[in-house]
Image 1 (cartoon, one colour):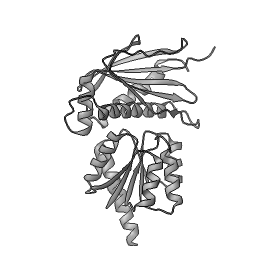
Image 2 (cartoon, chains in turn purple, red; image 1 turned 135 degrees about the vertical axis):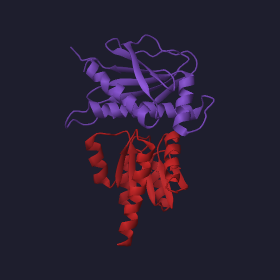
Image 3 (cartoon, rainbow over the protein chains, first blue to last red; image 1 turned 120 degrees about the vertical axis):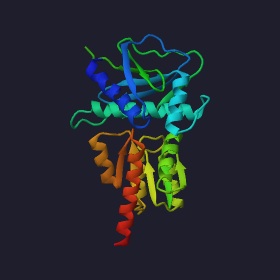
Image 4 (cartoon, each protein chain N blue to C red; image 1 turned 90 degrees about the vertical axis):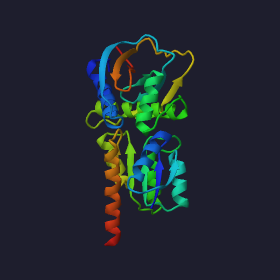
Length: 158
Length: 126
């Protein structure tokens, strides 16, 4: 599977679903491009997809967005990034990937599998992938703040 | 009434506990994986279980099968990101009472809990 728009749309639709249902927040897709480096000040959750398609999905949030989002989810003000926030971010990437994999599922094919999510926060980090993969970055604006969806699939072997 | 909420996400457990409180269920135990869930079901009687699918140690679907094999017939709602039709059918075949796909609107899960409890109450009266 190559990184075509139709393969990215399920992830974007899943983000819209998450924000409109559990967060009751308006969200709008902004720019789409090839990812370069992640902002080390962001809190980022990653989850792997395996099966017919192999790849990784990431959601990266500035601290202010992460706090607002988790506060909205729990109906309480959240002031610091703690385990609760990390846990919520992990669950959000799980939900986005889960929704996307169902949309990517075709007919009677076995469902794709998800790994357990991982959260990266604080300090300086980099995320690297094999040279035959493309790491797409989709920027969103929401009433809870900006955030970024990052998706990579294993490129089709030639 | 007593409920068990099973999800590896503590935040999702909080969300589901909040939903249960809206149907006046405040006596709630929690489990973070399938193994813990099965253990709690062996030790307690629950009126309803909310069960995630993807968890470490034991998947929710395997916990569901284990609980049903113990002869426990309380309502069990799968609450999961697994949205493929084949997954839903697999869970229903294994004994799930109902199925809610994440993400959900707060009212959706509350209504579903109320619905399965009403149904369970109705069947216990007949």
